[in-house]
Structures are given as C-alpha cells and as structure tokens.
Length: 186
Image (cartoon, rainbow, N blue to C red):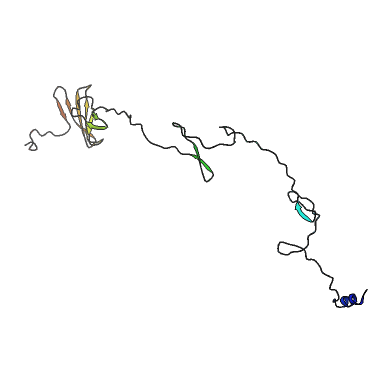
C-alpha cells in the first residue's frame, strides 16, 4: 500500500464502516426482506432485474350477461322512445324508474239521476213533482212522514213516536188531544 493510501486510511475514524440499513416501513426509507409465503389473498413481493413487483394470480374470464326478463336477472339497455302508452326506463343517481305522464282525459263520465232527482249536465236538483216513489220525507230518523202507496196511508212521526195517520178514505187518526180550531191558521 502506498503511503498516500495509508495516510488516507489513517484519517477514517474507527467503526466508520459499520453502517446498518434500517428496516423500511411506510414512513422510513430502508431495506426489505423478500420471501413471504402466499397466504389467502396476501401475495409475496418478487424481484426481477432489481425491480420489485407483486404477482397476483389472475384468471381473465369473459363474463357474459343475458338480457333481463321478468324471471331472470340480467342487463337492461335504456334509450327506448315513448310509443303510445309505453314509456322508457330512465336513470337517476344509478336508480331506474319509469315516468308516466298522467293526464285524465276521460271526460266521458255518465251520470244518472235517482228517484226524485233531475239532472242537467253534471248538476243534480230535486224534482218539483215528487209523486213518483218517494216514501219518506223528514229532517232526521225521529221526525218524518212516510208515504205508503201500497196500503194508501200517510204516517207522521215526531220525536221518534208515531203520532198520526191519514188514510185514503179521508180518516185522520191522531194520538193524543185534537184541537178542532186553532189560531195558528190566520
């Protein structure tokens, strides 16, 4: 060894060549050891030409999807154009829906007037002549008049009690006192 080399080496401190590479981590740049054994879906790092990689065993299979039907899951293509009462499927935020524009165009409603009613267009009114089948007239179930055309009589009810009957022969039957002349008729 030359004296210049010896002088150079004598200037190096003792243990100056005892460098220890730290273990690498997510926060420390350092060394890593390879040789991990595959475990489930955890794969070892491999090295090729001083470059590291992970070899994930991959099988590329072409998956074929069928068209969706009423009984089978599958793919659906949107883009149908509205035709009559058939409406296209639409998408919003990844969800499918059908927008059916609703307009009530059925104006052909038929009305019929029942007994004692008249009708003009869509307006009902009480007939002026109610002699065709009316059997009860009153304000409630306690105060009313019944017309019995089968037996030819008219019955009167007040306060829920039967109080009078007029028969076809002109007889008037009254429950209680009868006042023959009253000042209520002026």
